[in-house]
Length: 192
Image (cartoon, rainbow, N blue to C red; front, top):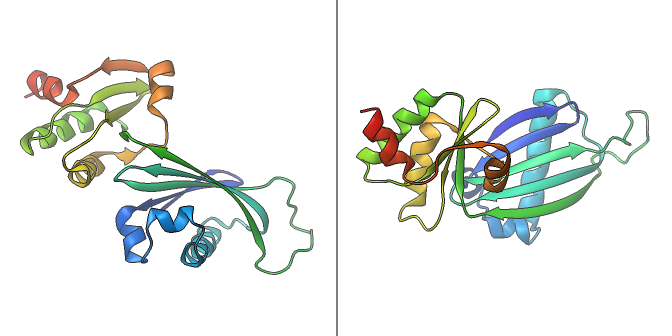
């Protein structure tokens, strides 16, 4: 599990598929709003509260993005109308949850060198394809469609980059397409 503070009242929590299985959860448990999911959610909020000093009481909005084989990303927003001096029952949290799925594997990289090295590793593993985009000086590598071994692809991508919660549609519209298809093969051919 990885925590990141986005703003004063918003945090991002990334859970890999392994994190979920270690806790005996599946993505279906989250969608079904199970008791195990509620316990994990409260544990994550306590950890985030301890790490960032963010007091989480009252209403929180939770957006959950399911990332194919990568796991899931949750964006937790503590609602602005909650003030510290308002009385609340201890430990009471109201959740508003929305779940979105994603068929593409999308990772972000701080520099092109990491993308090139990752492409060489994918090629050596017999994996090709992909598209490369750039937005705000960050590189995004997308692998779409039905993959033979999505867990293997994700583990190789995770060695060099981080999962992205952007949608591929946002990148296509606002970013720059560097290599549309066969990015792995193109990068290996030009930078071997």
